[in-house]
Image (spheres, rainbow, N blue to C red):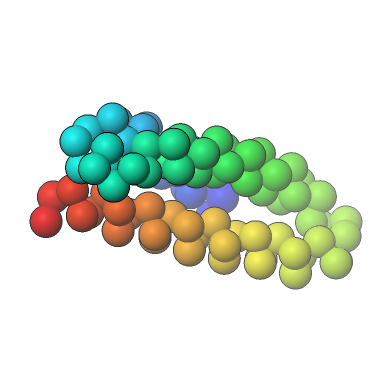
Length: 88
């Protein structure tokens, strides 16, 4: 699941960065927010990769990892809404 999510996240981050420079994002004043989101998503990606390797040895990590994945997908969905607003 993580292997599939990261290529999608990378493309999403690239697209968000591109959109942030366009007029609609400037009007909303979200360019800096989208750049920060992109950096945060990259950090979460790195943490998820590390945690995936460790979860087999640590039962407490499994729950935390699932919560982090859920948060990542929520942010990913939110970002898609932002991207979709540009085209509506």
